[in-house]
Length: 276
Ligand code: AMP
Image (cartoon, rainbow, N blue to C red; front, side):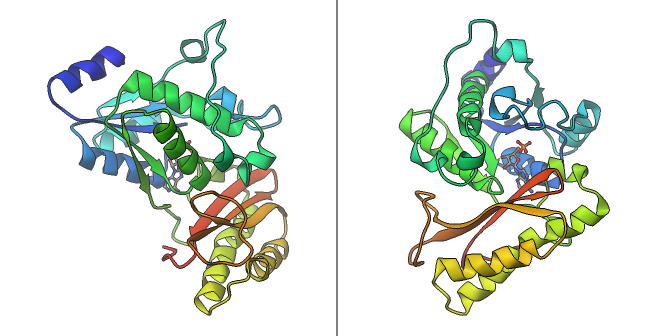
């Protein structure tokens, strides 16, 4: 992979990269289309990274379908699909990890300890292997994008990070590989995440600036649906991801909710259009 990318770079061409865990949906494809627009050679990785899953999480049952993924990636003009093995990525004796600070502590950092350490480590390794000029990420994983941007700045990694809007189903549910876990009834309850974000946007547009008021109403909407178990509903500063009490600068409402056994996340920057 390194020598392939190096040859492309030496010929004066640009390399773009989309890291993924596979089981593609339109959200992934929107990132690949942007990567296609940005560069001559588009590389997509498919790697279900064990170090970003907790011991009780869905690593072993995470959905996988390489043939389908390859066909979908081909349809949007991806040049290379890079699928390393666990032995390639974490051979015996492996002992180096990347730890991003403050931006990984709140939100998913609370309920998924070690998750962002795994994400930052695998992305750092993939950037060194794929050697891209730019890498495209989804804003659906808002905290992940913040952590990657921080790592790239702090470690002087020589690539540009591009963030893309969250791609949604026609009814507003944020696309996710994990949506296949949802029963039809759970899927209906899953719509309360985007419902809560829309409600927050409405309250914000009407002038509400007390975070607890907006959060309280959003929580009530989600908790009123069956199968839901709220992990967090928070309003945070978009730069630091720390909780905000009185909303002044740019803030994001971020949600994580278990619907049945499936953990869903979503977010929206207040005052920005929610495309749903
Ligand atoms: P994953 O395969 O879930 O690790 O996601 C790979 C990339 O796709 C990450 O940058 C995600 O943020 C992005 N992504 C996942 N779902 C969506 C979505 N609905 N819209 C846009 N990007 C997404």
